[in-house]
Length: 314
Image (cartoon, rainbow, N blue to C red):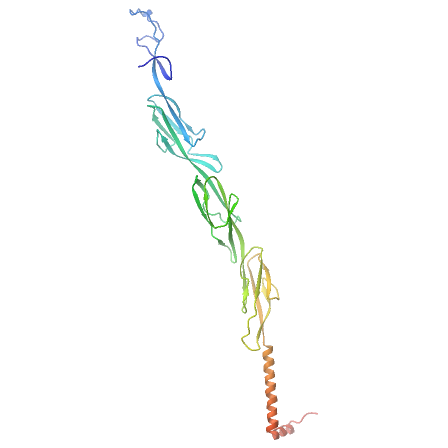
């Protein structure tokens, strides 16, 4: 066993003559002369380095110097290390002179060794929507660094009859994205909001003419509605607009409606046959006059008889 000056070794007293370390052999009457036992066994020391990747303070333990040939145990204190509310590191396993997935391990220190606890950086993706009554889109949670997250929302969300929410945009950390489908690269924590607006349906009804203005409108907007007068298909008969009923009260064929909820407006009409009746009356009158003229010219004696039978009243 080697011995010599004290160095980077464990030292054990060396007593080849069997008497205590540091004691003179003269008192024992050793015929080989007096002397003192001053010596040591030297047990080499080797170092275990326990690291984390990336560097995370106060997570890994067990590193240090060990007697060559001894067993060394090392460990990490937690599998998930939260460094901020939206950033964390998740343990993935040991590499180096030890390979394993457990929180702890051990190696035989036959030489200097290095073990590394590897962690995966993860960032939180926070997803919400406005107004708050809209369910948040899927995808909220933790993602590995540099991963790409696909997010999609419907262009409209149906509500009660005549009511819906229409997609307007995403905001990613305050920046607008106007398409319903986006990709978010998790280079860090992100906050994403899906923006929707309230819309209401306006129904425009009429049994005659052509209406304009029916459809979906943003809440609070003003809708313009109108109806045209249909062409008459019968001589002397026309359709006359009499006004709007329902959620609009107006006598004009064009009017406005405030869209603070689902609305229905109906155009009302009446049929005007005045010209037809005047035409029929005039036709009958002309026919009667024609008949009188014919009788007067061709049948005067009938006319005299009628005059005698129905004398004019004084």
